[in-house]
Image 1 (spheres, rainbow, N blue to C red):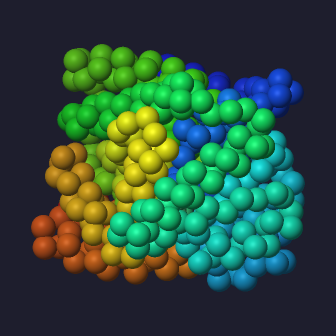
Image 2: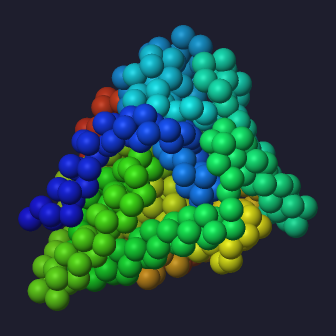
Length: 372
Ligand code: BJ8
Protein backbone atom coordinates (compact mmCIF):
# COMPACT_ATOMS: atom_id res chain seq x y z
CA UNK A 1 0.00 0.00 0.00
CA UNK A 2 2.68 2.54 -1.01
CA UNK A 3 1.47 6.11 -1.35
CA UNK A 4 2.16 7.76 -4.71
CA UNK A 5 3.16 10.96 -2.94
CA UNK A 6 5.81 9.09 -0.94
CA UNK A 7 7.17 7.64 -4.20
CA UNK A 8 7.28 11.21 -5.52
CA UNK A 9 9.12 12.30 -2.36
CA UNK A 10 11.75 9.58 -2.87
CA UNK A 11 12.10 10.58 -6.52
CA UNK A 12 12.59 14.22 -5.62
CA UNK A 13 15.12 13.26 -3.00
CA UNK A 14 17.13 11.18 -5.45
CA UNK A 15 17.22 14.17 -7.86
CA UNK A 16 17.95 16.71 -5.15
CA UNK A 17 21.74 16.67 -5.31
CA UNK A 18 21.76 17.42 -9.02
CA UNK A 19 19.06 20.07 -8.63
CA UNK A 20 20.94 21.76 -5.77
CA UNK A 21 24.20 21.98 -7.71
CA UNK A 22 22.30 23.37 -10.68
CA UNK A 23 20.72 26.02 -8.42
CA UNK A 24 24.22 26.88 -7.21
CA UNK A 25 25.49 27.19 -10.76
CA UNK A 26 22.64 29.61 -11.38
CA UNK A 27 24.13 31.82 -8.68
CA UNK A 28 22.05 30.92 -5.63
CA UNK A 29 23.92 30.66 -2.33
CA UNK A 30 23.48 27.66 -0.06
CA UNK A 31 23.20 28.07 3.73
CA UNK A 32 23.83 24.93 5.78
CA UNK A 33 22.03 24.66 9.12
CA UNK A 34 22.19 22.49 12.21
CA UNK A 35 19.05 23.41 13.97
CA UNK A 36 15.33 24.07 13.83
CA UNK A 37 16.03 27.50 15.35
CA UNK A 38 17.49 28.89 12.11
CA UNK A 39 14.76 31.06 10.53
CA UNK A 40 14.64 29.79 6.97
CA UNK A 41 12.36 32.68 5.93
CA UNK A 42 15.40 35.00 6.02
CA UNK A 43 17.42 32.70 3.77
CA UNK A 44 14.56 32.17 1.30
CA UNK A 45 13.81 35.90 1.17
CA UNK A 46 17.30 36.48 -0.24
CA UNK A 47 16.72 33.82 -2.91
CA UNK A 48 19.21 31.57 -1.14
CA UNK A 49 18.74 27.91 -0.20
CA UNK A 50 18.60 26.47 3.33
CA UNK A 51 19.73 22.86 3.82
CA UNK A 52 19.90 20.82 7.00
CA UNK A 53 23.29 19.31 7.77
CA UNK A 54 22.71 17.17 10.87
CA UNK A 55 24.26 13.74 10.37
CA UNK A 56 22.25 10.58 10.99
CA UNK A 57 24.77 7.93 9.96
CA UNK A 58 27.27 5.87 11.84
CA UNK A 59 29.82 5.68 8.97
CA UNK A 60 31.30 9.12 9.59
CA UNK A 61 31.72 8.71 13.35
CA UNK A 62 35.19 7.04 13.34
CA UNK A 63 36.77 9.96 11.44
CA UNK A 64 35.03 12.40 13.79
CA UNK A 65 36.42 10.59 16.83
CA UNK A 66 39.93 11.52 15.67
CA UNK A 67 39.09 15.02 16.95
CA UNK A 68 36.04 14.59 19.19
CA UNK A 69 35.50 12.50 22.33
CA UNK A 70 33.87 9.09 21.98
CA UNK A 71 31.30 9.83 24.67
CA UNK A 72 29.57 12.54 22.68
CA UNK A 73 26.16 12.63 20.98
CA UNK A 74 26.24 10.64 17.71
CA UNK A 75 24.42 13.43 15.86
CA UNK A 76 27.27 15.81 16.62
CA UNK A 77 29.98 13.30 15.71
CA UNK A 78 28.21 12.14 12.55
CA UNK A 79 27.75 15.75 11.36
CA UNK A 80 31.37 16.71 12.04
CA UNK A 81 32.55 13.49 10.38
CA UNK A 82 30.62 14.29 7.21
CA UNK A 83 32.42 17.62 6.91
CA UNK A 84 35.81 16.18 7.76
CA UNK A 85 35.41 13.36 5.24
CA UNK A 86 33.89 15.77 2.68
CA UNK A 87 31.32 13.07 2.03
CA UNK A 88 28.04 14.96 2.29
CA UNK A 89 26.92 16.73 -0.91
CA UNK A 90 24.80 19.18 1.11
CA UNK A 91 27.77 20.16 3.28
CA UNK A 92 29.99 20.50 0.24
CA UNK A 93 27.39 22.67 -1.48
CA UNK A 94 27.08 24.99 1.53
CA UNK A 95 28.71 28.38 1.09
CA UNK A 96 28.36 29.10 4.78
CA UNK A 97 27.11 27.13 7.75
CA UNK A 98 24.86 28.58 10.45
CA UNK A 99 25.44 27.17 13.92
CA UNK A 100 23.73 28.12 17.15
CA UNK A 101 24.35 28.03 20.88
CA UNK A 102 21.97 25.22 21.76
CA UNK A 103 23.65 22.26 23.49
CA UNK A 104 27.20 22.19 24.84
CA UNK A 105 28.38 19.49 22.47
CA UNK A 106 27.26 21.20 19.28
CA UNK A 107 28.54 24.58 20.43
CA UNK A 108 32.02 23.27 21.17
CA UNK A 109 32.08 21.13 18.02
CA UNK A 110 31.40 24.31 16.00
CA UNK A 111 34.67 25.72 17.36
CA UNK A 112 36.47 22.88 15.59
CA UNK A 113 34.25 22.94 12.56
CA UNK A 114 34.92 26.59 11.82
CA UNK A 115 38.42 25.53 10.77
CA UNK A 116 36.84 23.44 8.01
CA UNK A 117 34.08 25.68 6.71
CA UNK A 118 32.99 29.33 7.06
CA UNK A 119 30.52 29.56 9.93
CA UNK A 120 28.18 32.05 11.53
CA UNK A 121 26.96 31.35 15.05
CA UNK A 122 23.60 32.57 16.31
CA UNK A 123 23.40 33.20 20.03
CA UNK A 124 20.28 31.43 21.26
CA UNK A 125 19.67 32.49 24.87
CA UNK A 126 18.66 29.58 27.07
CA UNK A 127 16.27 31.57 29.25
CA UNK A 128 12.83 32.46 27.94
CA UNK A 129 12.37 35.92 29.45
CA UNK A 130 11.91 39.28 27.73
CA UNK A 131 15.62 40.16 27.93
CA UNK A 132 16.48 36.90 26.15
CA UNK A 133 13.88 37.54 23.49
CA UNK A 134 15.52 40.91 22.78
CA UNK A 135 18.87 39.19 22.32
CA UNK A 136 17.28 36.69 19.95
CA UNK A 137 15.53 39.37 17.87
CA UNK A 138 18.91 41.04 17.51
CA UNK A 139 20.46 37.72 16.43
CA UNK A 140 17.82 37.32 13.73
CA UNK A 141 18.53 40.90 12.56
CA UNK A 142 22.22 40.00 12.40
CA UNK A 143 21.41 36.91 10.37
CA UNK A 144 19.47 39.06 7.91
CA UNK A 145 22.49 41.34 7.48
CA UNK A 146 24.79 38.37 6.98
CA UNK A 147 22.48 36.74 4.43
CA UNK A 148 22.19 40.01 2.51
CA UNK A 149 25.98 40.40 2.51
CA UNK A 150 26.66 36.81 1.45
CA UNK A 151 24.09 36.76 -1.32
CA UNK A 152 24.36 40.38 -2.43
CA UNK A 153 20.53 40.41 -2.41
CA UNK A 154 18.50 42.91 -0.45
CA UNK A 155 15.75 41.37 1.67
CA UNK A 156 12.88 43.68 0.80
CA UNK A 157 9.59 43.78 2.71
CA UNK A 158 7.93 42.14 -0.26
CA UNK A 159 10.46 39.30 -0.46
CA UNK A 160 10.21 38.71 3.26
CA UNK A 161 6.41 38.57 3.10
CA UNK A 162 6.59 36.09 0.24
CA UNK A 163 8.99 33.85 2.20
CA UNK A 164 6.91 34.06 5.41
CA UNK A 165 3.75 33.12 3.53
CA UNK A 166 5.50 30.19 1.88
CA UNK A 167 6.93 28.73 5.08
CA UNK A 168 3.59 29.27 6.85
CA UNK A 169 1.94 27.34 4.03
CA UNK A 170 4.34 24.47 4.63
CA UNK A 171 3.42 24.58 8.34
CA UNK A 172 -0.28 24.57 7.52
CA UNK A 173 0.18 21.39 5.47
CA UNK A 174 2.00 19.69 8.33
CA UNK A 175 -0.86 20.66 10.67
CA UNK A 176 -3.28 19.04 8.21
CA UNK A 177 -1.14 15.91 8.13
CA UNK A 178 -1.31 15.75 11.92
CA UNK A 179 -5.10 16.16 11.81
CA UNK A 180 -5.35 13.21 9.43
CA UNK A 181 -3.20 11.08 11.72
CA UNK A 182 -5.87 11.37 14.42
CA UNK A 183 -7.99 8.92 12.41
CA UNK A 184 -8.35 5.26 13.22
CA UNK A 185 -7.01 3.40 11.38
CA UNK A 186 -4.22 5.91 10.86
CA UNK A 187 -3.83 6.50 7.10
CA UNK A 188 -0.02 6.68 7.06
CA UNK A 189 2.82 4.85 8.75
CA UNK A 190 5.25 6.70 10.98
CA UNK A 191 8.21 5.68 8.86
CA UNK A 192 6.78 7.51 5.83
CA UNK A 193 6.11 10.62 7.91
CA UNK A 194 9.63 10.51 9.31
CA UNK A 195 11.04 10.52 5.77
CA UNK A 196 8.97 13.61 4.95
CA UNK A 197 10.39 15.50 7.92
CA UNK A 198 13.93 14.33 7.19
CA UNK A 199 13.73 15.35 3.54
CA UNK A 200 11.93 18.62 4.32
CA UNK A 201 15.31 19.81 5.69
CA UNK A 202 16.98 18.95 2.38
CA UNK A 203 14.52 19.45 -0.46
CA UNK A 204 13.60 22.65 -2.21
CA UNK A 205 10.67 24.05 -0.22
CA UNK A 206 8.43 24.18 -3.32
CA UNK A 207 8.98 20.46 -3.81
CA UNK A 208 8.13 19.67 -0.20
CA UNK A 209 4.93 21.72 -0.50
CA UNK A 210 4.01 19.89 -3.71
CA UNK A 211 4.56 16.47 -2.10
CA UNK A 212 2.57 17.43 1.00
CA UNK A 213 -0.36 18.72 -1.06
CA UNK A 214 -0.50 15.41 -2.94
CA UNK A 215 -0.10 13.47 0.26
CA UNK A 216 -2.99 15.25 2.00
CA UNK A 217 -5.30 14.41 -0.91
CA UNK A 218 -4.24 10.77 -0.87
CA UNK A 219 -4.69 10.50 2.88
CA UNK A 220 -8.12 12.14 2.75
CA UNK A 221 -9.12 9.45 0.25
CA UNK A 222 -7.81 6.73 2.52
CA UNK A 223 -9.70 8.16 5.48
CA UNK A 224 -12.92 8.30 3.44
CA UNK A 225 -12.48 4.63 2.56
CA UNK A 226 -11.53 3.69 6.11
CA UNK A 227 -8.11 2.45 4.94
CA UNK A 228 -4.96 2.60 7.00
CA UNK A 229 -2.90 0.95 9.69
CA UNK A 230 -3.99 -0.61 12.94
CA UNK A 231 -1.69 -1.17 15.88
CA UNK A 232 -0.78 0.36 19.19
CA UNK A 233 -0.69 4.09 18.60
CA UNK A 234 2.65 5.58 19.62
CA UNK A 235 3.88 9.14 20.11
CA UNK A 236 7.64 9.55 19.89
CA UNK A 237 9.28 12.38 21.76
CA UNK A 238 12.88 13.46 22.17
CA UNK A 239 15.94 14.07 20.01
CA UNK A 240 15.60 14.60 16.27
CA UNK A 241 15.85 11.56 13.95
CA UNK A 242 17.71 13.00 11.01
CA UNK A 243 18.16 11.34 7.61
CA UNK A 244 19.88 7.99 8.02
CA UNK A 245 18.52 7.38 11.52
CA UNK A 246 15.24 5.44 11.31
CA UNK A 247 16.02 2.65 13.77
CA UNK A 248 13.47 3.33 16.50
CA UNK A 249 10.52 3.99 14.18
CA UNK A 250 11.35 0.86 12.18
CA UNK A 251 11.45 -1.21 15.35
CA UNK A 252 8.21 0.19 16.79
CA UNK A 253 6.41 -0.58 13.54
CA UNK A 254 7.99 -4.04 13.29
CA UNK A 255 6.66 -5.09 16.68
CA UNK A 256 3.03 -4.05 16.26
CA UNK A 257 3.06 -0.33 16.95
CA UNK A 258 2.24 2.50 14.59
CA UNK A 259 3.79 5.90 15.12
CA UNK A 260 1.08 8.56 14.92
CA UNK A 261 3.04 11.60 16.10
CA UNK A 262 6.51 12.95 16.81
CA UNK A 263 7.28 15.66 19.36
CA UNK A 264 10.69 16.31 17.89
CA UNK A 265 12.57 18.57 15.48
CA UNK A 266 11.76 15.90 12.90
CA UNK A 267 8.14 16.40 13.97
CA UNK A 268 6.08 19.07 15.66
CA UNK A 269 8.99 21.32 16.69
CA UNK A 270 9.68 21.78 12.97
CA UNK A 271 6.28 23.26 12.12
CA UNK A 272 4.29 24.28 15.18
CA UNK A 273 3.39 27.97 15.49
CA UNK A 274 3.00 30.28 12.51
CA UNK A 275 4.96 33.48 11.99
CA UNK A 276 2.24 35.96 12.88
CA UNK A 277 3.12 39.12 10.99
CA UNK A 278 5.68 40.23 8.48
CA UNK A 279 8.56 41.70 10.46
CA UNK A 280 11.89 40.29 11.61
CA UNK A 281 10.55 40.51 15.14
CA UNK A 282 7.55 38.34 14.22
CA UNK A 283 9.90 35.75 12.75
CA UNK A 284 12.15 35.82 15.81
CA UNK A 285 9.17 35.38 18.15
CA UNK A 286 8.00 32.25 16.37
CA UNK A 287 11.40 30.55 16.53
CA UNK A 288 12.00 31.66 20.11
CA UNK A 289 8.99 29.54 21.15
CA UNK A 290 10.53 26.23 19.98
CA UNK A 291 10.61 24.06 23.11
CA UNK A 292 14.04 22.43 22.80
CA UNK A 293 15.43 20.75 25.90
CA UNK A 294 18.52 22.97 25.73
CA UNK A 295 16.37 25.85 27.08
CA UNK A 296 16.10 26.49 30.81
CA UNK A 297 12.69 25.50 32.20
CA UNK A 298 10.96 23.98 29.25
CA UNK A 299 7.51 23.21 30.63
CA UNK A 300 5.82 24.02 27.31
CA UNK A 301 7.40 20.90 25.89
CA UNK A 302 5.87 18.74 28.60
CA UNK A 303 2.49 20.37 28.06
CA UNK A 304 2.82 19.74 24.31
CA UNK A 305 3.62 16.07 24.82
CA UNK A 306 0.54 15.57 27.01
CA UNK A 307 -1.65 17.52 24.60
CA UNK A 308 -0.40 15.54 21.60
CA UNK A 309 -0.79 12.22 23.42
CA UNK A 310 -4.43 13.09 24.10
CA UNK A 311 -5.22 14.61 20.70
CA UNK A 312 -3.70 11.68 18.82
CA UNK A 313 -5.24 9.24 21.30
CA UNK A 314 -2.01 7.31 21.76
CA UNK A 315 -1.60 4.08 23.68
CA UNK A 316 1.90 4.99 24.79
CA UNK A 317 4.86 7.33 24.45
CA UNK A 318 8.39 6.35 23.42
CA UNK A 319 10.87 8.82 24.90
CA UNK A 320 13.90 8.69 22.67
CA UNK A 321 17.31 10.06 23.62
CA UNK A 322 20.56 9.91 21.74
CA UNK A 323 23.47 8.75 23.86
CA UNK A 324 25.17 11.61 25.73
CA UNK A 325 22.38 14.07 24.95
CA UNK A 326 22.16 15.36 28.50
CA UNK A 327 19.47 17.96 27.87
CA UNK A 328 16.86 15.56 26.49
CA UNK A 329 17.94 12.79 28.84
CA UNK A 330 17.55 14.86 31.99
CA UNK A 331 14.31 16.44 30.81
CA UNK A 332 13.07 12.87 30.31
CA UNK A 333 12.62 12.48 34.07
CA UNK A 334 10.20 15.41 34.20
CA UNK A 335 8.34 14.13 31.14
CA UNK A 336 8.09 10.65 32.64
CA UNK A 337 6.72 11.98 35.90
CA UNK A 338 4.15 14.17 34.14
CA UNK A 339 2.98 11.35 31.87
CA UNK A 340 2.67 8.94 34.76
CA UNK A 341 0.46 11.45 36.56
CA UNK A 342 -1.74 11.53 33.46
CA UNK A 343 -1.83 7.73 33.29
CA UNK A 344 -0.05 7.68 29.91
CA UNK A 345 2.39 4.74 29.54
CA UNK A 346 5.96 5.72 28.67
CA UNK A 347 9.17 3.87 27.86
CA UNK A 348 12.55 5.61 27.81
CA UNK A 349 15.06 4.51 25.19
CA UNK A 350 18.65 5.66 24.87
CA UNK A 351 20.55 4.68 21.76
CA UNK A 352 23.12 5.70 19.17
CA UNK A 353 23.50 5.20 15.43
CA UNK A 354 24.96 1.68 15.60
CA UNK A 355 23.00 -1.49 14.94
CA UNK A 356 24.51 -3.31 17.93
CA UNK A 357 21.52 -2.68 20.23
CA UNK A 358 18.81 -3.39 17.65
CA UNK A 359 17.78 -6.79 19.06
CA UNK A 360 17.83 -5.60 22.63
CA UNK A 361 15.71 -2.54 21.78
CA UNK A 362 13.33 -4.70 19.80
CA UNK A 363 12.73 -6.92 22.83
CA UNK A 364 12.07 -3.92 25.08
CA UNK A 365 9.74 -2.24 22.59
CA UNK A 366 7.91 -5.50 21.94
CA UNK A 367 7.30 -5.92 25.67
CA UNK A 368 6.12 -2.31 25.98
CA UNK A 369 3.71 -2.63 23.06
CA UNK A 370 2.30 -5.87 24.44
CA UNK A 371 1.84 -4.31 27.84
CA UNK A 372 -0.01 -1.12 26.80
S1 BJ8 B 1 16.06 22.76 18.43
S2 BJ8 B 1 16.67 19.42 19.33
S3 BJ8 B 1 17.67 20.72 16.20
S4 BJ8 B 1 19.30 21.72 19.23
S5 BJ8 B 1 20.66 15.33 20.18
S6 BJ8 B 1 23.05 17.72 19.12
S7 BJ8 B 1 20.60 18.57 21.62
S8 BJ8 B 1 23.31 16.38 22.33
S9 BJ8 B 1 19.82 18.27 17.94
FE1 BJ8 B 1 18.49 19.94 18.19
FE2 BJ8 B 1 18.04 22.44 17.55
FE3 BJ8 B 1 17.20 21.50 19.86
FE4 BJ8 B 1 16.03 20.74 17.65
FE5 BJ8 B 1 22.79 18.26 21.26
FE6 BJ8 B 1 21.07 16.43 22.05
FE7 BJ8 B 1 22.83 15.80 20.23
FE8 BJ8 B 1 20.88 17.51 19.65
